[in-house]
Length: 241
Image (tube, rainbow, N blue to C red; front, side):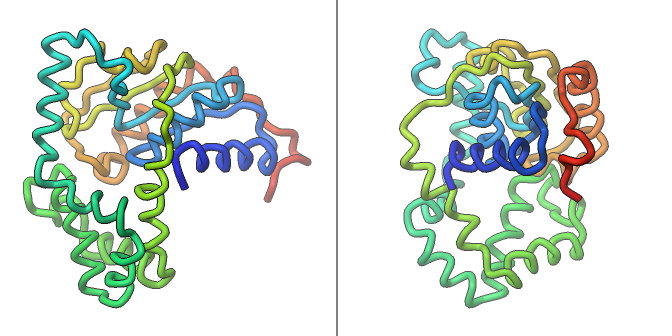
C-alpha cells in the first residue's frame, strides 16, 4: 500500500480496465503522493498532475535553500511539532491501534474527528466546516466496513520506499490552501519543472476539496482545460459501464 504500488494499480485501472491511453490525475494528502508517483512512473500516459498539497523536495534536492525556502520549511516543521503522534502509531503499530478503534465507536470517532478539527480551516470549531451528518458519515464508512486498519497501511508500508520522489517534468498544477500558504513557488520548482498553474486560495485547510469544493473544482477545470486535447478517450466498446 505504498505510494508507488497504489500508483501502479491506478495506472492499470485507467488503461487496462477503463481503456484510456492518456489521462490526468488529481490528489490530496496520500492521494497527492500517489499522483506524484503515477506521474513519475507513467509520464507518457499522464497528461498533467494537479495537487492540493505540493511535494516538499527530498534531501537530495534541498541544498542551497533560499532564505524564503528555508524559513517556510522551518515553519512547516514547527507546525507539526507535537502533532505527529498519530503518524508514529499508524506507521509502527497499525494493527494494535486498529484493534482498539475497531472495538470502540467513540474511540474511532475521537480519532477521526480530532483530525477534522485540527487540520481544517475551522478556527477550532469543526462544525463551521463539517456538519454532524458529514462527520458521522465518514466515521460510519470506517466502522461498518471495518477498514480503519487498512487505512493505516500506507503509513506502515511507505517506510520501505527508499527512493526519493523523482523530478516531475510533465505539466503540473498546484492549489495552495491555508495549511501551506506562503510556500515559495521556487521550492515547488525543485520537484515540478513545468508548473503551468498556481493558485493560493484565501481559505481551506487540509481537507481542501471538502472544505472549498467550488474553488478546487474551478482550479481543476482551469488547469486541465488546455490539456484536454492531449487526452484520448476510449472507443465506446472499450468503456466499462
